[in-house]
Length: 90
Image (tube, rainbow, N blue to C red; front, side, top):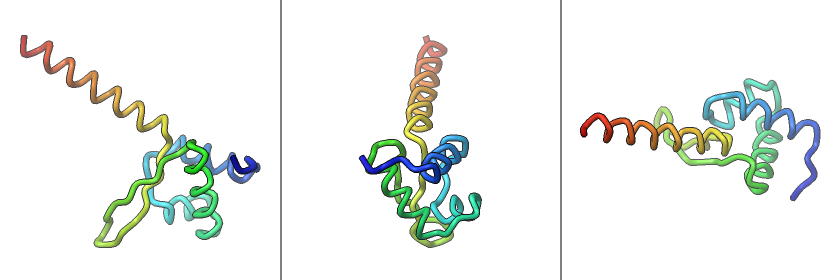
C-alpha cells in the first residue's frame, strides 16, 4: 500500500463525508489540482479504501468516487427495504 500522507487522509475524510461525486467536483470542493486529486484517488482505490465507478453526466464520461462504507450502507438499506416490502406483502 502506498504511504498514507496527510493530503490523502484529508481527501479520504472528504470522500467519506460526501455523497458519491465525480473526481472533478472533488477537486473543486477541496480546492486542489485535478491531476493531484486524480492520482490520490487512484491510490486510495488501489488500497481498497474507496471505489471508483464510471458514469455519464451531461453526455460526458466521468469517474464517480465513493467510500466503500457508503456502498455497504446502501446495500444494507436496499436489503432492509426489500425485507420490509416482503413483510408487508404477507
